[in-house]
Image (cartoon, rainbow, N blue to C red; front, side, top):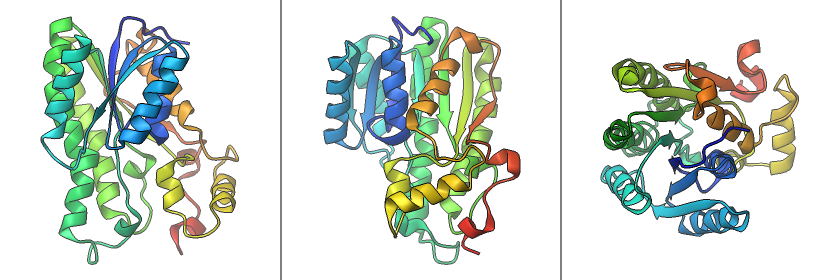
Length: 265
């Protein structure tokens, strides 16, 4: 367990899936969490659940397709909570309708995925860093994907966005390490999340089990396992780590990626 008492964290897309796992672990370890998410229902429920175990959290509604959302989120969270120590850029979309090749991908779909998965990370960081500088230190954690390293078929905007996040992490680390702001990336593999479940066209539980069989560890991940890594990167235990990525994938990248059967071949 890592101690985040007295720290304030923003988690984008923090009401569901991997974001909820990160939110829960940071709150359990003492951080006050500002959950920025498009879902009012799930955001308010997350706050209620955290408060029920003695944690502290607030919810800010945000649609990260819109480029004015990041500035509003940072301003509202800091206005209410008074400071900002940890930023977790986690929000991401991969709509089932986006599973197409470049020829068939519309410009509108490309822009939507890039705006949420990449541009929001840039803008959230842009508006968060001045507050971290005031405090004399800060942590930025970007959630990318193993698809930023090795892609699958029919995901051009998603793969492009995730690869760019890894590069952005390295670049930002160089610019802000002298300001005592560390920037790192987590690359999840396959996790049991709403995003994964909505991408399944057949039996969901059978498909989740099948995905797990292709992973060396023998199962898909639980969102809280990403939360534990995020908590580590947000702590002093990782004080000499910046500009790096950590694959949390059950060994997928160790064997070189997915089997051809899951690539649609």
